[in-house]
Image (tube, rainbow, N blue to C red; front, side, top):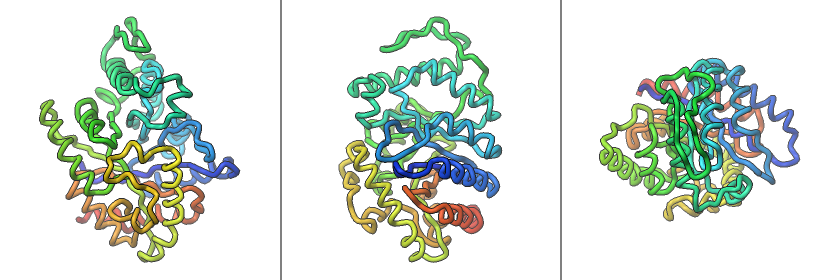
Length: 339
């Protein structure tokens, strides 16, 4: 597969921000992403995000599919342990139909106590529920009828309500931070969805684990291997850092309050560092040549061929977001393809 270029519309804003204005800005971003020839738009999923506002994943993606009719739509990620598999399977079958077969199903455990408590799920049961729910969703997408009893559900000759458009089903990307989760992604997913938080050195170590686990289960290395990274591009390196650093640092301060660091390997767990230290081997921020070189490096060293750029840190002005989206499409993407 040729290199794919995606964008995450994070859509995280301060509590006192005007969400009507921000929603319209996000739709403008989506239309530009579509026009510029990007391949994918991603939306994450969190609940109870105070002191920030964030729009909910599924209705957001349903709106995006009409604003951006040419891109794939990545639910990256669904907190699968928290939800009912019948409901999830039906939601995404319908979304696959509505979008003309453009859905990607990203899923992972999640790590926030507030979310587990809100959905009445004991965190210690998360892995079991995740694996059961994923098996049920996959079977509902591929079998005519499904009978299966899980910890918190029972399917009695159940079937999805509308047919899938993709054969055999939307790609299943499994997000993973910890080593044990990466082994699980190899065993259960169509691919590992590499995370944005860890340094390349850590990811290289974990890629060896991933390949070992694929071999253990006689699974080929995936044709599509995605990663999400903080990306910002400006005409010069110094301008890119000056514009992006405050917003990326603000995003990582929010991750700290959510407990993201606790889900990461020990060597990358300190995310309270100053921007320069935090950015080293973790963010892709610079001029077009630098950003293109990093994209190519990620492909050559890790084997990734779908890089999803997170741009909009909390509060980043719309003009900056649109400018970097345009610069990446017009100058970075051709350089990467040529390399």
